[in-house]
Length: 497
Figure 1 (cartoon, one colour):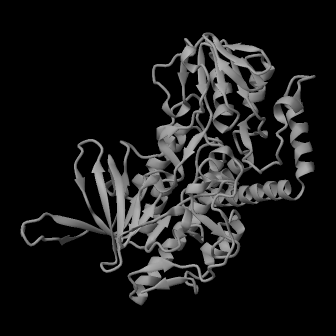
Figure 2: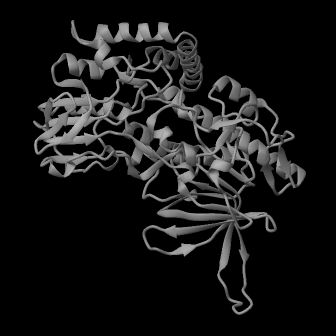
Figure 3: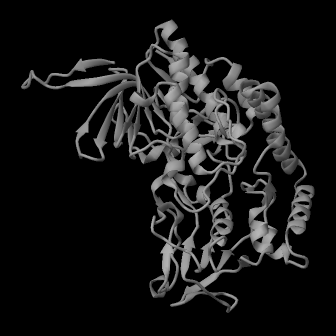
């Protein structure tokens, strides 16, 4: 690790400023993955991982609500370089955290991660060919400004300090407990209580069956239904392959199987949405009690994969409904009352605990203000390059995974591509790398071309994407394998100096 001494004219004893080749922001699944690829592919590079929180894991350490688990199988959500050895393919948060801690330990990343380090802002200087990153110690308040050749943002796109809760009329009248899943109290006991979960996304369908095990009754209140599909918690074929072929080869083959399976399902839904809708309805009807109003509660107005499908392991949500411990209500809230909520239909739902599983707030790159040569970076005026860099922003990369498949599939590809890009620059003696759109008339569309509410609320503050490579943000692992995995790191719209 090198240091450069910056000395002001009036002070010739200024403290040295730490300089790194790469500064990674975020110690979740993306940041840990980036650190491992740098360690393996470019062992001579000096890097650090800054984490604002007290522990690693990102989402999997932040969220503590009952039943929290993955909604992707761990053979694809796990890293390509590290086999998933648990029997459960759909895993809970403690299992995923254990996997991430093993990855850190096995790849010598412990000393690379600096906890309680919050990035306040970052400024790029072309003259110096480096970033200056202002950092604050969350535990002490101390501030300092390390510099780096490359800034790598691995914070995903959720705001970690605040979830989304709509304005509910009369909420102050409710005498029970209101909690958002992002800020789950450790001492909240729902045993024997009436629980109302507002929402129908991945968090809600996880919470309902988990809380139904101890609650008196759990009701999921939704404005609009979501596509929900049962999936096996254990992948018996993957477990068999591991037993027959060993961890490494069995995992690799199971991973390829599941990648192909994910792609086939998504492609079928895109090409034959009406048929996909009928199949999902048929599966739901078989899981629910006879005569259940499937179309009212499980038939969304949009096509499958216009928004993400929710997976329920072993059909646990449907089991809770069949057992009478959980119920679904599709309606709108008129107002909160002292005892619960009054719906537009006139029905009142009484509750002791209300869980507002109403979504998350999107925040690109952790909301870190960035500037280039003194000019602020306005994200909405930038265009994403290969889904990993931004037009006009030098030596900056980010890690955002798939929305229609396992997040980590894309993280691995772009981390490999990033390492190949750095190796190319080192061989050629380049210090600066900046994507620039060659055609200023190129049409653009939202960076995350997804109709989920949490995306639509933030779309105006996000980068754009183009209508052609390399400015399209691909959602296809097959296409990205060619572009990021084996494709050239150079093209006419990536400029070096």
